[in-house]
Length: 105
Length: 105
Image (cartoon, rainbow over all chains, first blue to last red; front, side):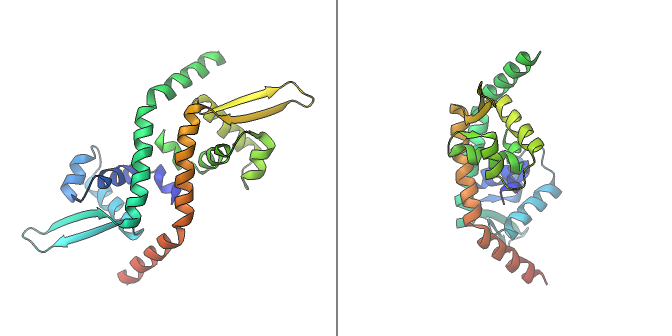
């Protein structure tokens, strides 16, 4: 499972669903750059893993909701924390790389 | 940074160093299947990121220690938690996939 976290879209879908139930269009808007096809593929994989639950309501047009399962919630919390860490430390990592590269010259 | 966690060796080195300082040989033994070349590459990348610190002691033969930096510790703790989660939920995820695949037939 851990290797799947190398997939940017999987991480972003998990982070967004950690905030609450989302419709397909809401996920699409929340994740800039994701194509419909990739979002469909990513949510389908997460449903297959038992991490996300998809509910279709028989409205016109049909409404589709995605939410984390209890197992998905436990993972989603950790993945969100990692995404936060990554954002908060981006500059420090960039600075460390520059120091390293400079010291190599 | 998050995409690097899709790299199995990076994760395993971070998890092992979360337990404490390790020599090169100790890391090698703790991570079955990693080649010397891949371990060298992985630790070098983590040093460049500012997550791991490498210390060479002028003994004969020279001894090399690897340890997490404070920034590496904050990431290492989360990555270890994720690795534990992954191990603990492997069976549940496999079962979910089997249910999904069966229901597709």
